[in-house]
Length: 195
Image: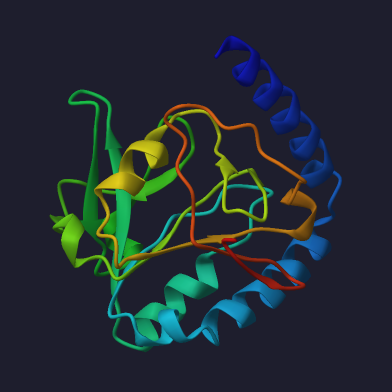
């Protein structure tokens, strides 16, 4: 198990270096290409309740996807990790201007005092972040394990989709005992279905 953790750490560092080398223009251009593919994706078009995440620097930008969801009257749900209870809450964000807050770690998260909880079984499509993926749907996150715990809670019918730059796809992700897979990965060049 420690070997897998060490290998994942090395892979994480290698991919993070690649992503850091992208210019803002490259990130923006590739993000728009990925966004276009997602917005044309039938499961996304048909979904009414969408689990999203707020992107960090170097990740595929999700700001326009969130705006698109509001434009088409989708219910936007964003996870919030409650450090006290050590649980991830799924919160409905009605207005990103007033319902989101900046954490001490400089992350944009839903404000649990303003947002209502959403039952996990109402999520129709879930956008799952990650740093590294393979074509079988395996992923390496940022190391917190939040999504490895959240994915099994989602209904089997919920499509689990990751947005990633092509440079985040590797031959094979080493598998740990609690790691979870996504169903689909959308990059700027292709849509990868778990095989």
